[in-house]
Amino acid sequence: MAKIEPTKFIWMDGTLVPWDEATVHVSAHVLHYGSSVFEGIRAYDCQGTPAIFCLDAHVRRLFDSCKVYRMDIGFTPEEIKQACIETVKANELPTAYIRPLVFRGSGSIGVDPRPSPVQVIIMTIYMGKYLGPEAIEQGADVCVSSWGRLGHNVFPASAKIGGQYINSQLMKMEALVNGYDEAIAIDENGFVSEGSGENLFLVRDGEIYTPPLASSILRGITRQCVIDLARDLGYTVHEAFIPREMLYMADEVFFTGTAAEISPIRSIDRITIGEGRRGPVTEKLQKEFFGITSGELPDRFNWLTPVR
Ligand code: PPE
Image (cartoon, rainbow, N blue to C red):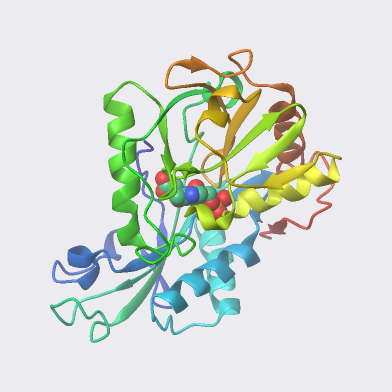
């Protein structure tokens, strides 16, 4: 997807270090067992000032994920928030994708991660449109994956844990190899779950539907913002189990996510969705969302933390 362009500094275990010095040893536990939790946060160019989107909610989820995974991060949420701000500032980026990562470093071999030290890094890089620049207007072509999402007693889907992303990688590779832009997973009960790195919404007869947390989805922060925004605009939003066939019968389907923002879907399994392009509800939500993040509209939901 996006190539990493190095920036000046990476925040590592409490200090900013030059990009090239932010390294780990090959014996690091995370490399062998996927023992990490992470976040993805965007900073938008808000009238010339970088503004971090939903910083509190992302830091809260990072700590929630650490809790599930029995990881003591060693910093307070306030310290991590300040570190995100400091890293954006130090790299002098007008916009950024902020990637906090908490992982088990080098110290022990074997499945029990606890003897390996917990390390924290915050990387800030450039990120463009997740599913390509055209997809945000024209819509993406997606498939239902042959890979399913696992139940909550196998993988805690609402915790953003590194190792769990093998499932997403399998979905994404299969989709790309077969000529699609992205895939949608089905949960263990046969209901629609989410994309490899996005939550999913559909529109039918002017009402909006999205799978509930119990469909093995990540508790998406953009998802919550879109629910709040849609209700504020007067739409009815249902968090409801969605049978697969409802995807094909929808008037509009779109993804949400930090990287994906609000991305329309124009076909699923080569079946045209609605008119085969971005629908009016999706467009309206995008307009409001990008209006707020660019500072053209007031930040009425308190989404933004300006970096001065
Ligand atoms: N589901 C999954 C599986 C997921 O990874 C993401 C974010 C979401 C839903 C949307 O959540 P939120 O960002 O809080 O609205 N995926 C992140 C990583 C993507 C990547 O390719 O890396 C992201 O969008 O930053």
